[in-house]
Length: 258
Ligand SMILES: [Fe+2]
Image (cartoon, rainbow, N blue to C red):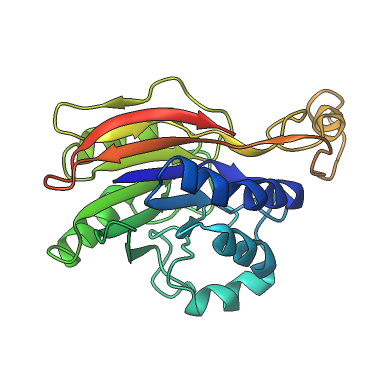
């Protein structure tokens, strides 16, 4: 099975960019399941239902979130009845939506996708991601053939820690949030495919998707600013994980851009 995982889709132009190219990518690369992080799909702080629907219609099977999942008021009701649009699973159970789902890949395999948020340099503090994932895996044991984790976190160490804690138990682990792809894609001896951060689908000439002047105003001149999505051409970054149908183990991982 081939799983395409796309980094944070940032802004309306990026939604259009990904949506217009994804069907072709899925077809040409024989992708069986596509997961994309959508928490910035309507700009720096959240996703409107329309943007999420556009990504789903283009071929995304599961959309994940993070620290900005609840940034847009409309998302709170939208996510209630969208099983494959996730928010981090370590939010309190009373939060709208779900932190994981089981979907069928094109191969027929049952794929458990879990979305977690790190606690390092992020507010509010959420439940322990380790305990949350352990509980989900135990609860869904026997109901899935393969497990994917999107660990949305600021710290590289927090993402790596998930790999060492769940090596061999989760088949594919990737990180999101920092918008900068890392060069550490690998497969462990126990068959877990891993990359610390997928990168971003969004404006090339930007600081993490945001207009650079806005960031400099804040970072250099210490002035209040509004994070405006940068204009200009987009690129999509992610990784493709190939897994063995009989064992679920990851056999190949490669970074991808389109
Ligand atoms: Fe984020």
